[in-house]
Length: 163
Image: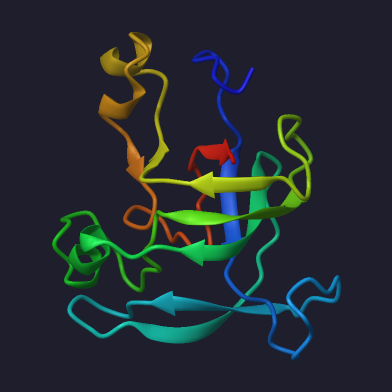
């Protein structure tokens, strides 16, 4: 069912990088209300580790407790503000691996505890010519994780992949 082109994947998430702000072990069920994220406050600025509130997933989203997030050339381009549509501050990243720790009310495809990954492709519209042909990667309205929306905080339309 997850691979069916006529079924919209759940919006992925509002992932949380590190909730271990109270010195609890990483596997502890006790979580803080805050998390750490690496953010770029403005174009050309240095990466900055910041505390953010842990968001709740919307009805069609899952939240991911991030265990690892890679950094690549596109994150440097995000940092430098190369992409014309980017807004700051921005939490870059699109090479995410973690576990689902919260599921929105309308999400049936995923469960808490599943190990998942989130990649570059952050979502598609299902309505443009490319999408109607099933060519989602060439969507005219595609979103990119970590560029169009924050990754380590909210990957709001990213495709979640089971690992």
